Length: 476
Image 1 (tube, rainbow, N blue to C red):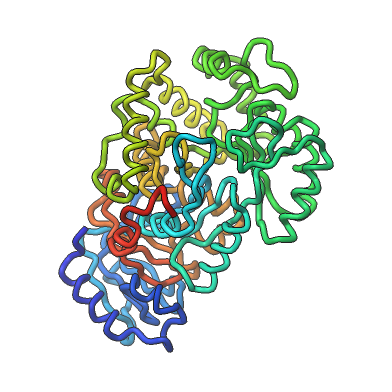
Image 2: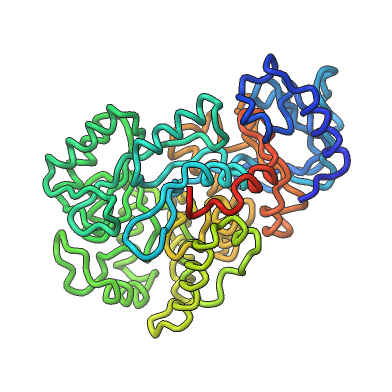
C-alpha cells in the first residue's frame, strides 16, 4: 500500500539518518524500519483511541523515546522543534493490536503435525498491526520462548509475546507433538517445569480431565500466571467454577449442552455441534452459562476467522495470502476449500452467526471479549491477515468498528494486566500504533491498508515485512 507523498519522503529521510546511537536494533531489523527517530510528530490524523469511543479528527500525536509524549487537536499540540514531522491527513491511527489466540505453527497437511513458523509468523503478525500477542498454545515451547527472547533483544522483528507452555492435554491430542497428561500430578509438574523454562502463561486442551485441569489451574495461579482453554471433555460452566481465566473460540466448542455428556469425556463432534446449533441463546441454559462466565471473570477469545474458513465460499480469496504461502501450503489450502464445499456436513453462515450472536450476548452481559486469528484449521486464517479479517467479522457480528478495535486492543491489554502500558492511545503509554490509509469506521476493510506499524515508538514498514515472508508460510 502506497503511503501519501509526505510520508514516503519522511520515511526515506528517516532511513538515511538512522544510526545505532538512535536505535539499538540490529542491522537485520533496521532494514524493515521506516521511522527510528528519537521524536516523531504525526499531524492531522484521525485517531481511534481503543476505548470504544468515536474517533477524533484532525489530531496530532507526538512520539518521544518510544512513548506518546503529546496528543490532541492539531491546532493545540505544539510540534517539538527536534521532531520529525509526518503529515497524516486523511489517514487513521489506532492502537497496536493485542492478538490473544496466535500461534507460531501452521498446518502441514496430511499427517497430524504442524510446522513451526518461527520466521514467517512474527513478521506477518507485526506487519498486520499485532504489536503484542499470546501464543495461545505451543507445540514447540522452547522455540516459542526463544523467539520471544530474540524479539525482546531486537534480533528479529515481531510482536511482544506472552508465550504459553505446551498444551495441558490428556490422551487423544490432535497432533503427535502434544504431551499426554494422565494425572493431576502430571499437570502440576508440566506447569512447574515450563514456568522454570520461561513460559508466561498456559493453555488447557480438549481431552484434559476435570481433576488434571483443576490441578493445572491451581499450579498456574500459584505462579501468578493465567491459564486459558480450548475445552471439550470439560464444559465452560465446569471450567469457570474451577477458576479458569479464559476460554477459547466461544460457544461453538462448548460441549456442556450435548445430551448425555459424561464427565471427562469429549462427546461426538456432530452431536455437540447439533446441540449448540439448537441452543436458544435467550433460554435459561445458555443464559446461566454466560452469567457464570461473567460472574467468575472468565474472558472469551473470539476466533471468527478460523471458523469462517470452514464455510464454502468464504472468506474472499486474497492474492496476498496465496503469495505468502509456500506452493505446497497453497495447494493444500485450496484443496481443503474444495473438500469443504463438497462435504455433506459442510458448515453454514448460520453456524458462524450463532457464534457471533453468542459473543454479542456475552459482551452485553458484561463479559470481557478478546480476539485472535488461530492460524490452524484448513489454513485459511494466516498470521496477521486472519487478524485483520477477524476485525471485519466482529463488525459483521454487530459490533461497531470502534468496539471491534477495543476488543482487539484494550481488552487484550486488560486481560494481560498491561492496560496502563498498551491497548489504547493516551499520553504516557507506549507508542504501539497502527497507521492505515483511509477510515476504518466508515470502511472496516481499511484495516487491511496498513502503511506503518509503530512498536515501542519504532515505525516498521509492513510491505517489506510481508515481502520478506513471501512463500514461507507452511515451511518456516
